[in-house]
Length: 247
Image (cartoon, rainbow, N blue to C red; front, side):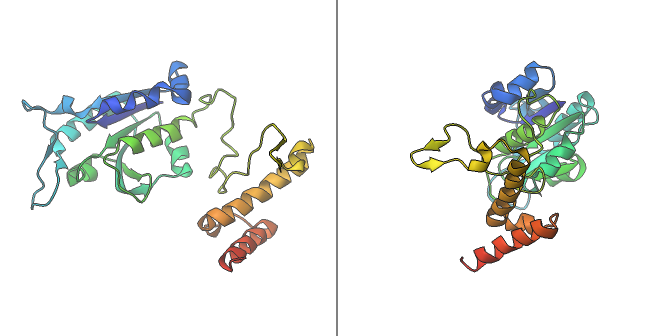
């Protein structure tokens, strides 16, 4: 899968993409990640990529011409890849979106800056808009890193067969169950006996129950979106009720 990132600060990506799973996947030929300097598509002497907003107001707006030229160029070299604008106004990034994006041959990420991009970029050159949360950052670079990480790790083989993505938080609409490793006891705090029992069915039952309880306690909105039924739903609603009653 080919990731193209359009930014005015390509150097920001050197460190994060030179370590861990992303580096392993790139080295294995499973993915390629390229950070492109938007200024390469600016045609004026000073390589200007922003200007004052029409109508006045604070800050600067990223110009349509270099962005349009850059996106068109990247599309030609990354056919079939959707173009996503990183913006606080976008759809909130989720595991479901990551699973959808990994189905494409590539992904083009446009990093906004300043007061945003010229609206014509949003309207005519981008296929989607993505946000990583209801807060504002100085630019789209850090969100782009998060999106690449979330999508790339879902590429078959990217985790090297050492880890599974099927039981992670959000993968099944629930937060992941608590995890423990050796030692079994530390400073008077013990790992749950069921995890040491070797009884696979009981361990899976415990993990399922703990996932439901943790999700109901920490993210009741996920429970309310649906998906649970029967005894699982009864357990979740009971946890939510007790939390609201302060019990």
